Image (cartoon, rainbow, N blue to C red; front, side, top):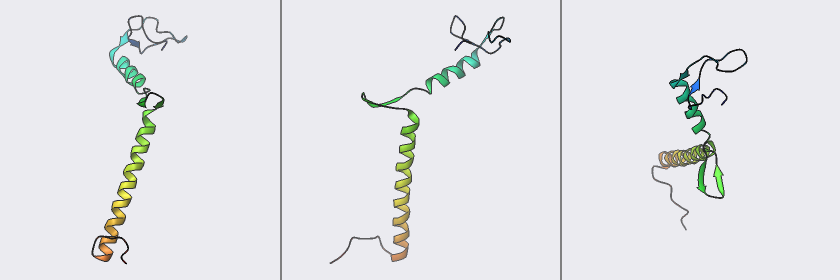
Length: 90
């Protein structure tokens, strides 16, 4: 954040002391910084529960994997018995 200029843009050049003395702001660097800062936002399910986005994506991935596993098992059972699996009969 110390590389941000007074008008909001970010500098790419710096000197040995770590300041941006004598350099110009760069539009590409500024846009990358904005994207990086936006990626730290949170996902709100409802006000008391605030989750980072990566946790939401992990749970969505787990749910997708579980659905794929169930479909795979059902498909294998169908191929083995020649019909869709049904519950126990009495």
